Amino acid sequence: MKRDVFFISDRTGITAENLGDSLLTQFPNIQFNRTNIPFVTNEKAAQAAVLAIRQSKKNGVEPIVFSTLTDMATQTIIKDSCAHVFDLFGTFVEPLEEALGTESSHKAGRMHGIGDTNTYDKRVHALNFTLGHDDGLSLRNLNDADIVLIGVSRCGKTPTCLYLAMQYSLKAANYPLIQDDLVGSTLPKSLDSCRGKLYGLTIEAEQLSRIRKERRPTGEYSTLSRCQWEIARAEKLFIEEQIPFIDTTTVSIEEMAAIARRDMKLR
Image (cartoon, rainbow, N blue to C red; front, side, top):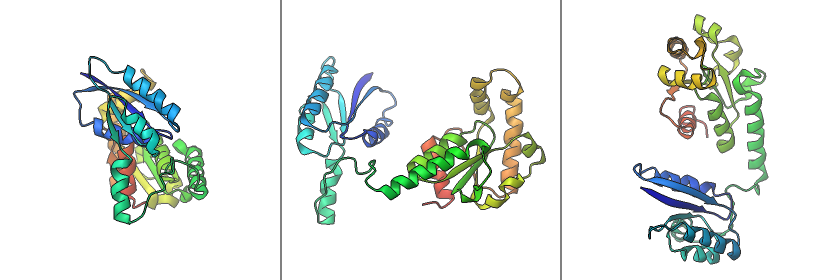
C-alpha cells in the first residue's frame, strides 16, 4: 500500500519532515511517497501547493499533509486541499499561548534562521572545528573539543560528529584507531590531553564488513576476520581505559548523537 505525503512549510521544511517522518515510522507496512514543498510564504505559493496535493489524489485516496505554516491565511488555503492536513504548528502553539498567558509572534523560521547571530556563529565555529579534526586530520587543539569520538574505521564517527556540530553546535573531533593502536591495546599518546572527552563507537563485525566492502570490495581490510579482530581489540581498549562507548550497529546517527551527549553530559 502506498500513500502520498506532503510536508508544507514557510521555511525549509526540516521541522515538518522530522516530526512527520517520526510519526510515519509507526506504520512500517505502508510505503510513503514523500514531497517537501518549502517556502510557502504567500497565498500564490499556497495555491500552487494545493494544486500539487490535489493532483496526487489517486483512486479517491486522500494524501497526507504535514504543515508547519505560521500564517493563518496560507494555512487556511492548505486545509482546503482535499487532503488529511495535520497542522503541526497550530496544534501546539494555541495551547502553549494559553499556558504562557501571552500570544506567540507567529513569525516564520525562527528556529532555523540566523537572527541570533551568536548561535549562528557558534554553529559555524563548531562545524569548522569538526571538519578540521575529522578522521585524525589534525591532532592540534584536541583539548578544545567538546567530545572526541574514537573507533575503528567506518563505524560512524564522521557523520555523528557532523550531526553534533550542525544540530548542537558542539566541537566534535574524531580519531580512527589504526593497527598500531589496536595491537598494543593502549591509548595513543596524542589523546592523553583529551582523555576525559573520549567517547567510543563500536559495531558488529558482520555489519562493519558489509560497509567496508562497499568501499573496498577486495583485500584484508573488509574481511570478516579482520573486522572481528579490530572490534575485539577496540572494545578491550575502551574497557581497560574506562572509555564509555556505544554499539552503533542498529542505531541511527541522530540516536548516536543524543546518547553521546547524554553520556558525556553535554548541553
